[in-house]
Length: 129
Image (cartoon, rainbow, N blue to C red):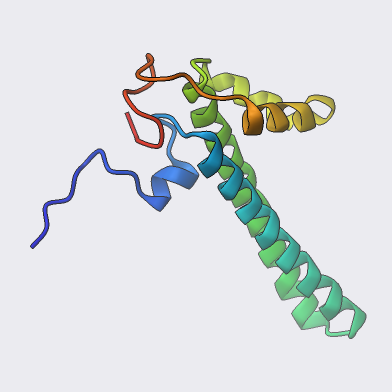
């Protein structure tokens, strides 16, 4: 029997949690996880469409649509926690949805180092607060 630490990070917290902070590496890895998953579903959709497989194309279209919604929501929460690591308010994560600003915002979140030690959003990075 193991005692589970309630403040221990989980995959659900990483992708969909809003409390705490995350560092650059988990942010980058999670970002590219969604990019790879999106590339996979879009590739399967295009292949099914080119083969004339209408039911397969419809299935992959639905999978791509569901994945798009899930990844957009997840990327918002990832950016929210990444901003917390920088000591900035999470609602600035909405800037990742502004087309002209999003590329710069995501790039900045990937390269800007977080605050050392505790800040108002948590004691340590990569943990829920």
